[in-house]
Amino acid sequence: MTDHRFKLAIWLDEMKLPFDEGLAVAKQIGATYVWFAELPGETAIAQMSDAEVDTMGARVARHGLKLFQICAGHPFHNIRLMDLDPTSIQDHPAFHQDFNALVRAMQIAVRWDVGALCSVYQPG
Image (cartoon, rainbow, N blue to C red; front, side):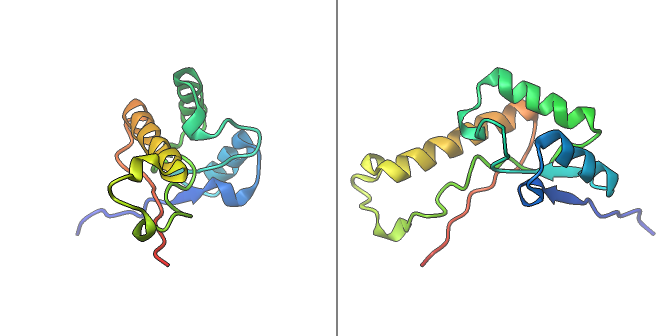
């Protein structure tokens, strides 16, 4: 018999708590992992400096938690990619902003050694 265990991840945004309080609650209820996109009182992930990224990672670790994935906002959530002109996609302001957020999320994932990113595309 193998020793498989579930890995419980908590989406901190839904708690609507300050970051450290949310981390404490996640740990208290048995989570191993956390993830988030927009937290009250915190710099948006896509706008964080490397120093802020390092500080936030240390705060997660202090609570004995790990990061499940990196979600720099909700890239591509509100853009209909089918409506974009492939010859000028880089000129579309919303696409450009979301693309940059996704790139920043990748940089942060490398910095935090997290192997997953969140990007939401909703066809419509």
